[in-house]
Length: 244
Image (cartoon, rainbow, N blue to C red; front, side, top):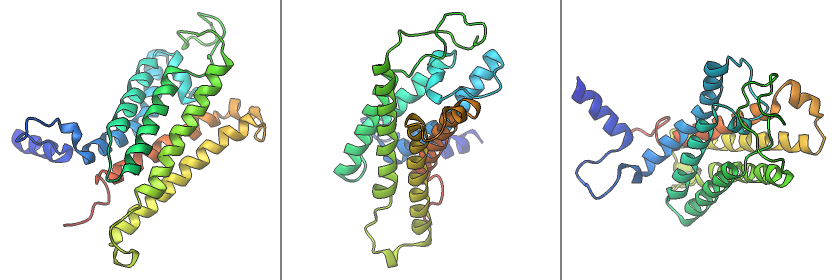
């Protein structure tokens, strides 16, 4: 029973024990699966940790604001790991590598330059979930927004233009490949639309009232992260894999 489970895990993660000169993360399918799982888990982990720690039953204004809470370590660790995995991801063509590399760098910069504070004072009784503050910096805030947007734009580009490539003519592609391409494009469009909503808020096209009452930024970021993660799980052959 144990051997069977180990064998299944080895197969899922593409772990090769024969070649001890190669680490298991060098397999592109393994990287795609891990990236997908971590991406989809991030919003749930952040909300869950803060709920267990502080009993907070509603999401914060944005995913980035969890940086200032007890869930901040989860935010930093997961996003940093995603960044490094994207940086080392090679893909099949130079375009895959350079777009993924750029996405990873943008993610790291978003971590290094956090968004605006949740509160202006330490120990705010109205926001007990906030455990730290940083000096106010408009540059840091807008730089964070820019890096986060570029991060998702790169991922959206990968899904729409790179994941959908094939060596076969469109007429000769199997039904699973056609389905996967539709999923990639839908995920790419959802990511791009999710970026536009907070941008529309910055331009006052969408009133700020909606962002405070219904944390639109959080939900749009969650939509983008879930779409990104799902696309990478599909690309990692976890879902809708071709039958050999």
